[in-house]
Image 1 (cartoon, helix red, strand yellow):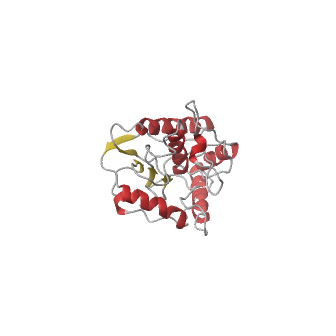
Image 2 (tube, one colour):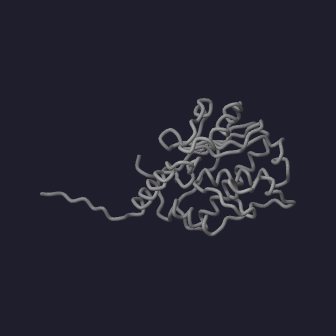
Image 3 (spheres, rainbow, N blue to C red):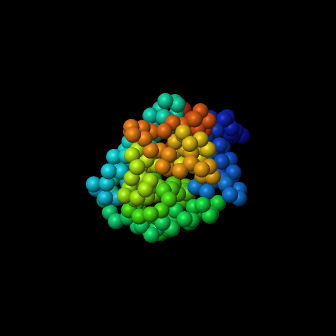
Length: 230
C-alpha cells in the first residue's frame, strides 16, 4: 500500500519555515550582525555569570520577567526560564574581543573559546571592564548565545535607570529583535544616534516597544510555539 505524507502548514512548520527564511536573510552582506530576527528553536537555559553581590543580577531577573510579560500579553507560546546565577571569574578579554568583532563580521562573529566554555544556553555575562554591551551570535548549531554587559562602574551604566534598560535591550536582541531609530523606545540603536545614556530616568522604568516590534515577536514566537524536534 502506497504511503502518503501530509504537508499541512501546522504552527510548527510555519515557525520552522519562517526561521529558515530569516536565517538565509541574515547571510546577506552587512545584515543581522548578531543574527537579529532568528528565533530560539528550544527553550534555552539562562545562566548569569558574575559576582554574587552584583546589583545587575536583580536587573537580569527583572528583564526576564519583563520579556515574559510582553510575550504573555501577545499570546506567544515562548517564555524565558528563570535565570541560574553562577559565581565565577568573568573572561574580560574575551568579552572585549567579541564586542569588537560583532559589528565587523556580518555573518556572525566567531565566539572566543573562553565564552564557549561558560555554562548555559543563553549566558548573560556581567563584565567589569570597558566594552560595548552586546548580544552575540548563535553558536553550537544555534543552541547557545552570549550577552555581555559592560561594567556598571563605567558611564553610562552609572546613570540612573540606564543599566536596567541596557540589560533589557540586550535580552531583546537575544530573543530576536533588532534596532529601531526612535530614541524614546527600548530597542533604539545603531546606526541611529541612540545611545544608552538616553535611558536615563529619575524613576525606574523600562522604555516601551513599538507595534512593529510586537508583531515581529509574535511572528518569531507564535501562540503555538513549542520546542522543535532535535
